[in-house]
Length: 68
Image: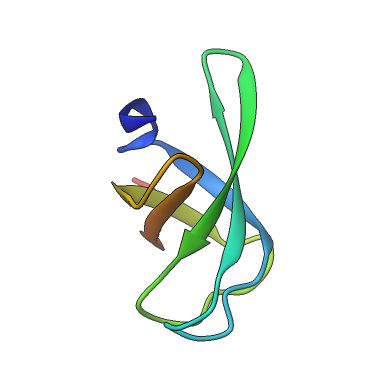
């Protein structure tokens, strides 16, 4: 699971506020995985995000990702 840290994904379920969960889809090595996701600020469906932490087996912390 820690291999998700540093990966970029896209939200498939919005995160409406810092107390709510959304869902992020991450592709790593040709394998697509979905995780429950939390963010300190609201994010819309389709937003690009960076996985910055792990909260458990299937949940992660994300931040907005603007790319390079």
